[in-house]
Length: 493
Ligand SMILES: Nc1ncnc2c1ncn2[C@@H]1O[C@H](COP(=O)(O)OP(=O)(O)OP(=O)(O)O)[C@@H](O)[C@H]1O
Ligand SMILES: [Mg+2]
Image 1 (cartoon, rainbow, N blue to C red):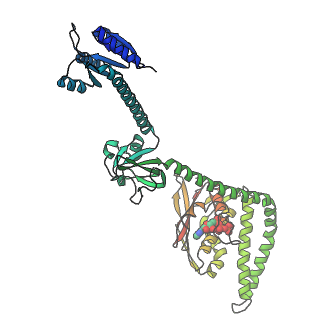
Image 2 (image 1 turned 180 degrees about the horizontal axis):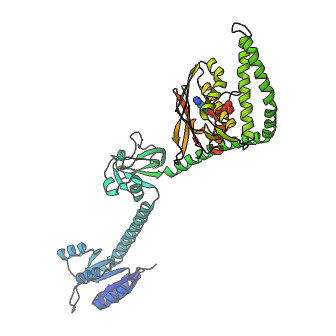
Image 3 (image 1 turned 180 degrees about the vertical axis):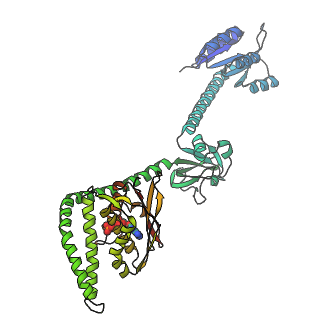
């Protein structure tokens, strides 16, 4: 686009010569002898350069003071000052004020004029371009989602954008000049590898001002600037991404567990009916077998070589009885038969049933019953099953022998209702902390195949909490033992 030059010159002849020369060089020109008119014309816009005469005849101000007035009014048109005579102090004042160039009206100055105009216009164009690209760059750095940090050769911070302020929790004013090691781990190598090519340095842990850590993904690039190597780091906060991944992993694990349980439950539901009827059918013959066996055992002295296999058979039959009872309970819930039950008596009886088994495993039994434990309303069969499951878990946990303690005392439910507290403690292997949250899940077992079905505790929970409105909880110290605590609401008076 053709540039337009405004000439403010009170001498018409000089102006005409200047116009002619500039137009020949391809510029558009406008001329006015009046400062006031030039002022108005400049306000209208569209002028690319002002060729300003310093000396006006019959006018109150000179060129330079007119220029100052323009600047004060916010007009920043580039100016070339034209003077009639050499005056060093004038030139210094003019350049200080921001005049781009000056020309003396020497005999050959007209030849030089288009050249000076072209140089000033080019200068202005380059300055504008530079300002624009600086503004663009600043906007990118200011609004970037990622932290952008530049470092000098000593790896001290020279740029710290708002995203960096946010990520590290420190204002730029405080971060500038600090070594980057304040914010990034010592081991991170920031030395240039291939000049100019950015490298992904991977995940690192950034340090916030408050000492907390933030996971970051870091890339870095090196560039030569005025003989110095400058390093630019781009850091992305990946906490959210990590959290989401973590959640996803947890969900996947949950899903895997649920799928496994569902699959097991579906399998069980399918065979449930059948299992229940078979279990039912097995119940009676099992009873007969164990009675007969008892009789045979009673007649077999300890020295008899048949004694050992008979005892093994006895233990296996006990296990079968419990399995059958669990299966029946699991597939046919809800047929409760409530009556008044003396808990002390039930515990004693069930321990009696189990005593042989316990003795064989060198497990001693201790009971600690508070006096006057009142009766409760409960399903006797179901309570026995709970006790049997707990005793059998305790016995399994003490393969080398130990002590089983059963306690009964008065207490209350978390809601305040009076209750009986029943505790079954063992001195066995205990439960690993990572297993503890799962012990009430159906089919959760740590026992080897064929030894545990993982139904004991879930059944206890259902019997206690759903059928009897009580509570069951478990505490364990690995290597020291386990206590199962049951709260059963008292009979309402
Ligand atoms: N007293 C205990 N000491 C140590 N671990 C126990 C104890 N009671 C339960 N557990 C742990 O909890 C798991 C689940 O117990 P649960 O009684 O539900 O199933 P199981 O004993 O494995 O099988 P099942 O009772 O069906 O024969 C056990 O496999 C065991 O890891
Ligand atoms: Mg069990």
